[in-house]
Image: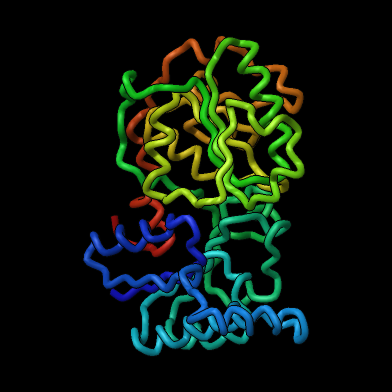
Length: 321
């Protein structure tokens, strides 16, 4: 069987899908349009001028042309999966479809954040982790997945009571409020924020706050679990309009770490355990020190297996177990 995955894989999560397929003996390929770069500085300048004067992003056009070039080399595929298909124009989807008999989409985000109405009719099946979208559009339900091998916490590695890693955005104000509560509890927290240097202009607190680390350098995906292993509890703050579960939930599950989340929908999942997962009230009134004083309770094996990447791959591609 031949399967091709097409995605903008900024954090390198999607490569795990390809690796899992290959372990099953499937000829799997990944076309990562996020890896496309300008050939030289001249091409970069040309793209900038085109965006300003012609309202055309040549880089995006070239990314989509790259998909067709690679598919011509790979040949006909049994299945093609596109993650977040709204990043690709309809005319390119029509060409991509010609390379497969089964065209599948997986939505990493809600349709409110990333509208897909212009292309979604082109797919044979559409998977989503967003409860609202599944109910509204009849998408097939799945969740994000646990791509890590299960580990057990080593108390010697723990430096912090609470750890957060994320992009710089509107969540910074809530992070600051949580930081103040952690200080009041006498607990150690660390918040690593990745973003452009413009964050300095909009901080709600002094830049020298010892709980926060700001960086403009993207942290390699392979390094993320090492950060989480240094903390007893992981913090998960969802973006606006998101009801699906982020990868942090599943990373915490694999690492046997407790998690604090702002996502109310986690309560509807069979692995939800209030000892392991604290769902924050909007005013943080239920963020208490006692949550940090109890140990993680292991999830039953049959439930844990449901959220592994292997099970996700079997479901999305309809593979035999």
